[in-house]
Length: 267
Image (tube, rainbow, N blue to C red; front, side, top):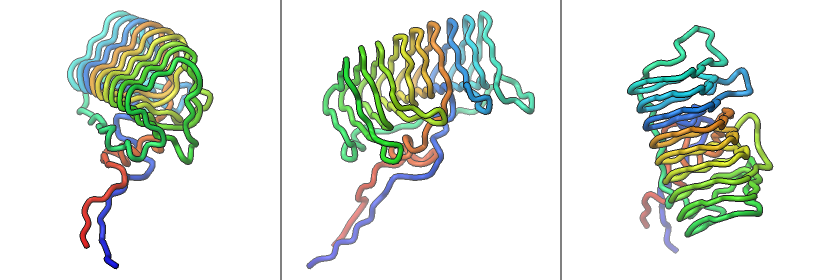
């Protein structure tokens, strides 16, 4: 009989999400809002704040029910409306601030703990994507691209991590959602593109760019390591990010941790 001693690391825990997830829309690059886009919150106790680490450009008639912050430059044309739900100290609605770090992750670090695995693309044009529960969210690993189109139904709580690009179009619907926090999360290394006229739910992170077009509504939040572009008549209804869907991947708060794994051992 031999004894082996092992030092292991486990994921962070707690109820804090990384700072970038505290915004309705966050961009590590430039952020462009155009057309009649609306970024709002149906809960009067929440501000649908928007932040960019680059340049902020508003054109057309966008409406924002929150504060607008930027690191580099701010410009606007047309008739944008910026009106936070809460502003008891009468602070400026636009301001130049310090940068906010973008969360990072490597999908391959989480393949071993995934409840479902797609080594290649995850293509779906109909049927149901079944996730987990609020107590045990599913974790789906996608080694290629995610392509959902047509009549796809998403049910349950869960995390999808994508090594490539992610595209959602058509009539993707969500049967389970929480009005107080997101029940679905999509974290993509590549671009995220959403189009169509259906309502989408969840918290979305791309380490590249996010592009949303069409007339649908997103209920949740967006964060991009690159640029964010919103066009058309789409609407974002801010719902706070769910720490239960960030802690397994990013740990608690700003610290990024890997899954439970051995660090060193000896006999």
